[in-house]
Length: 229
Image 1 (cartoon, helix red, strand yellow):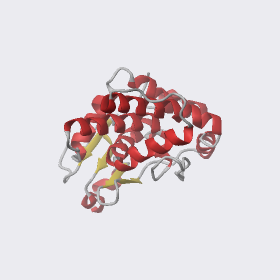
Image 2: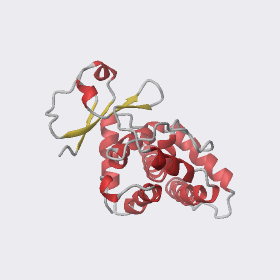
Image 3: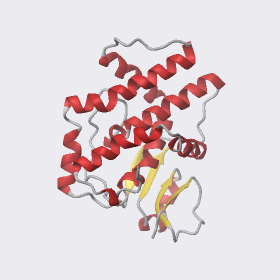
Image 4: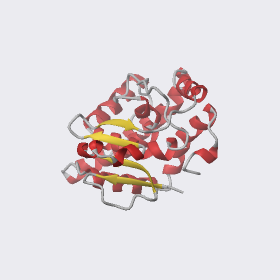
């Protein structure tokens, strides 16, 4: 069974017999015959780290409609993103200013601040979303359209919204480290390694559970999702 994700920014010479999905930063790869054989995510480093998806199967229409509709219900959206946004900014303020974040902040202000951080550090956010995509959608398939729903959170497609709990926390962690170290990491392979280490953090389980629950509620079977909690 193919079960590996190949992450590369160069010409592919590896054994692909166990590869299920490829994530590449190399535009030339898309012109090769190899890419047509695999679900592929291309992250365009020259176009604000936008992601493009190729060869993924299309999810069932009913599942896709249920999944997208759930993100249009206001209270569910608030429950999905507000606690994470508050945690992120509270962490940031503790590390940088040695003080906590105010508890009585208005949601609009909170989301605006987290959106600014994501926009300024979208390379972290987009790469984490790319790595999560095959973990959650390789077997199920992607919805035929991926409309951006959270207008108040920076991003380009639905997966930016769907993976917000994990991608936002990782982005704020990395951004905070950059400020403390005085340098920014733009090495895509290094960022991939950092994110995989982040997934091993014991508290990431609760964050992983948020999008997992959304898939189950939309009708996905647990056996069709690579990750189990």
